[in-house]
Image (cartoon, rainbow, N blue to C red; front, side, top):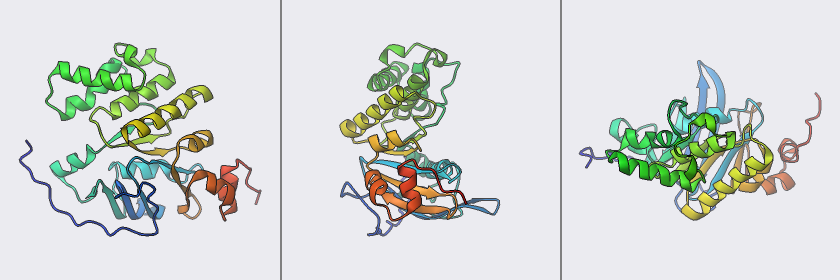
Length: 274
């Protein structure tokens, strides 16, 4: 039993202009985020919310700040201004045990998978359980194995990461992100470096986890086939204006956005020279 009680924080006022497709209180709310390093502005006025069980995609052209935004959402960096609310709690204001508790609300899959090569796949998936729980080793192994089975890797538990294909490594990384049963998963470029068939299989896995278990996904990607296959809603960042230039259903943005650059992006058309 944790002796530390959470510090009460005020609940942010919902923004009626932001979409909430599930019709319930958002599990993530970002308010007026301003991001920069050493005085250089990267992103400004970033506001959006994500509903429970939604597959939400952050996209945009190269260098627009997608991964930078993701690093701020998971607490690796603090913004210059703004708020990030996770499960009704202010991530940026949380300190000590309260911050650890907020961080346990989500799991993270990095682009490379970030598996430790000296550990078996099972040991990799066990890492969050080792760090955050006092379960007996046998129980940790059972939990880790159950997560591997959820992603179709039950038979690979005793293999080393080097023995896995790129797609299998991504699946193992998702299993590790689910080890503590978070309600939210952040995925950074899950389809990067994968062939179309393997990428489609990963898309199916994301849809299955969302539909069966109500997991909320926040995914950074620019892979259009994956975006159309998995995204309930997207936001599109722009490197020139340094903010969100479009948000909504990807099919609607492709067919009827008022911004020519947005339509070009979704229709995979070259940008006019000059």
